[in-house]
Image (spheres, one colour):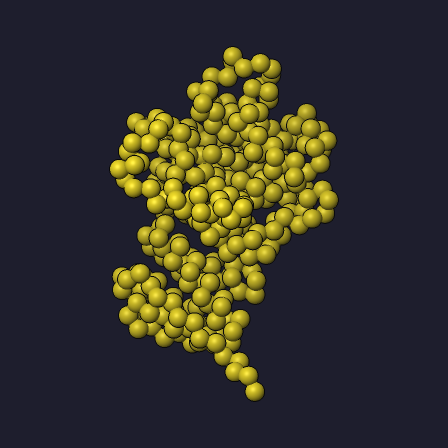
Length: 322
């Protein structure tokens, strides 16, 4: 008779990481143990997981996700542990459908990190998602917004992006406002076109159900019953980020996405995204989600490229080309 039990060993970076990961008086260990029905044996910086194969695999995923959260946030909370367990158990949000495309194809998350992102979108009115290229942070945000629009939870989608290269001065470009800002919003258009029929997108834009704006044009507005997405948030200044986040009216949702490693602002100007994830980290009702290399869903080569840039030495960073 085959053995129905599996053992997985997880080696942690340090004793300090283990102490935080296991929680006060091993509270987080007990939460995972009780939720997944596994046996957990902690010895210094080594964690041994024993249980049915599926449960042991889920427990390992839980701890890997918690390690990722800890690396980015510098701390863990009981809510973090509960959220990750909810995402991982039984497949959870890892394969959850965010919305349907016009062809009826489900737009699904493909990693546990993306699952945490979707869970945050469902449970918070303001979500900030930081991660490298290819992690689906913009695509999932647009898909989520379309789902809210279709279900009647919002009446409008507003897509916003900084136009850093033009210094927010777009007057010299030909055409109307949409034509001027289109080059900067192309990734958002691409995501919309994959999810919705292009004719539907055009009709919604003509009727202001879907609106596109450069970040500078958000000043002075209050948007209610809307899902508002700021893409490339790392290229917003601190004052612009504050302005954007305070445009939120009643029954609205805000999503900010960006890559903290790809800021195009001058060196002397602090990124509004970097400032926000630090300044707002303890604000109740707001979620900050970090994605990393493990969440990249593009060509596998993208993961290797991102890793190479993240391993760039401080000396080479200081001499990089602008």
